[in-house]
Figure 1 (spheres, one colour):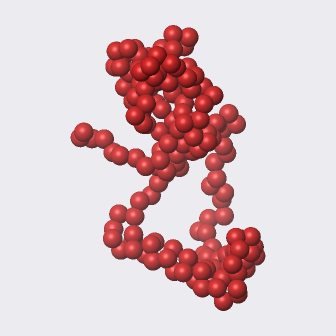
Figure 2: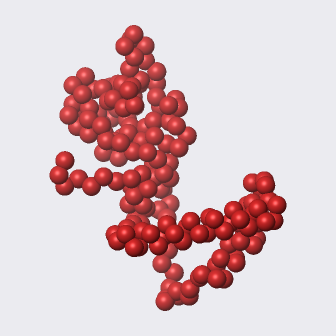
Length: 174
């Protein structure tokens, strides 16, 4: 598949939010990032051990009240510009469709979509129904439920079982 760039779920979510992902392209830059994160994590664990912290609640309290402020004092730098670069979030943005796992699937001749070793029948009740050979987007939300989209419209589907029993997916968790 020439010309296709594989995208991680993180990169897909960033694109949906209009965030540009800047990749460290040199081994030196990658090592610097990993080294810094490893140092911070290592220091955090050692600091907790020295203070006798052994619960998640105590660790979170220490992280928020002491550790982060000391790291920020030591390593933070003033921004070159005071302008706020944050972009407002779209009011109608459905974050379940942003923070999810997304796959593209092709509709078979019998209006079946297959994913995760399961088959899903696209129902006739859909206002817009993709023809065989068209691509649909399958999103697994963080609650585990599966949702099928064609031209930005959610499709009504049923799980297709070989013994002729069907389960409506619109309210089922996978």
